[in-house]
Image (cartoon, rainbow, N blue to C red; front, side, top):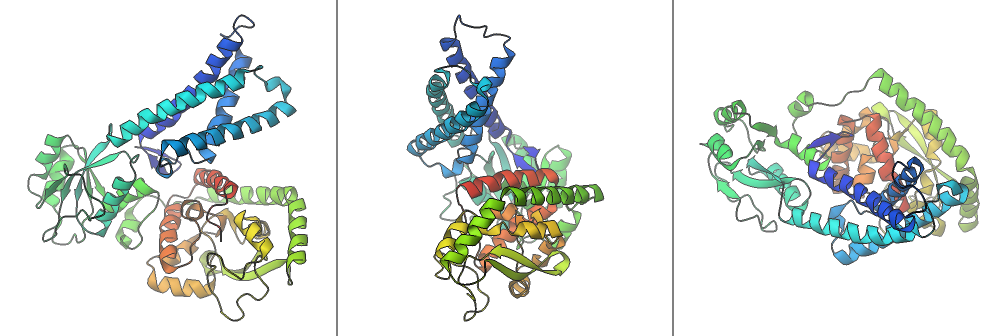
Length: 468
């Protein structure tokens, strides 16, 4: 596993992405070789190399933004082919715009069209081969799971559902008195060994070639296999706490499973004066820039809102900021005026009849959030952080959700890790899941993490995901 931007990725998956980059570049080069043979030097041609790399970057960017690197979302080769054609079509449009403004970047007549044919064939072949690797679990790292509680079951579920996670369950060591850990809907692989005691754990790991043991015990006091795990550790076998492993695997925590000691002694939660200063400077710069760039959109939306329904253009509401400091958030009004006059504070629902016609559009494309740039400029918010909540809901949620109040240790954001990973939430269950992601962000906060979230936010906005 490699740690990039505070998240862990199997080396195999990075090889897959880099391999696809090479495939795209080679496809374009072969097309150039065919179309330009004898017309210009193709070796040691720096200008041609830059043009080919440009095509590769645009193509792979469109593949990413069309979800082609989220392998869990693609269910068939038909869907893969459709998305691939869509991505390459978008690449053609972007390249056409670049070529219009910079004719010198054009690679040559007919080369791109021929490249598309090579790219389609090579990517479909490459992905078919990679799918075989995933389905057969090739290059997966086997682990031993010690424990059979909810945390252990959550880890097994992730490994079962996420074929590209890079791990395979080799042995499950059940806690005393527990039945089989595998739930009916998981249909655990028959090769998984169900072990009922900790005796001989180290010898079994060495015999099976397993180098990682994950400890996810429901109850550790009086039941912790200290002797066996210490022996394994002395033999060079990696021992990981279940919560740490789950964080690596998913990019989130399970707040209902972690204890204060784990949070206290785990890595992360580091904020330096320099990083805070840099984050604030970036917030100020981009809020001014975006307010200037989007000014025509702001004026147009304000006009449409007044034309569509009665009431003010802007919607102001008190939210809870960092360290529980209240502030007033500003958004474009997307609901009828006084939407909560009868119901009181409630979460927005799917197909909410309080949302206006213009409101549906601006919520789908997140345009209603643009006035929050003023909150960012004022310092009430940051671009990246947990979404701000109302005091009414904060009081409710902190009573039933462990560590909920910890999300107020950082500034709220216009977008955040929970928003790009989970989407909109309108229930206590959704609030718990979003807190799992928010706690991961707070624990691993960094400028590089913010950059990753910005890329994911652009993708979310482009496809109108998660809005209500």
